[in-house]
Image (tube, rainbow, N blue to C red):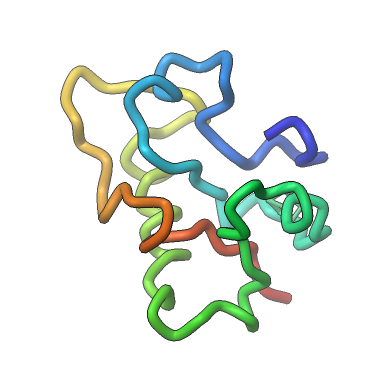
Length: 98
Ligand code: SF4
């Protein structure tokens, strides 16, 4: 998502993982909680951490684990080692709370 000023939403469309992942992941360690991604999400799947619906409470950890597993942003693996549910409606990325 080009709107992110710190490039912490991956995979980007120019990264190989974009073709295989079913959702985008926000790196909670890098996110500066600017809110720029919220209004541009086409499926309203991004929430401020303190506004994250209870049914998606695990989303931040899912995203953090994706970055821990993948290493550098955009990195790919030979296997489908992506953690968690890839359905964007069930695991929306959550911005880092302040
Ligand atoms: S809130 Fe976080 S993920 Fe969203 S655009 Fe800002 S820095 Fe990027």
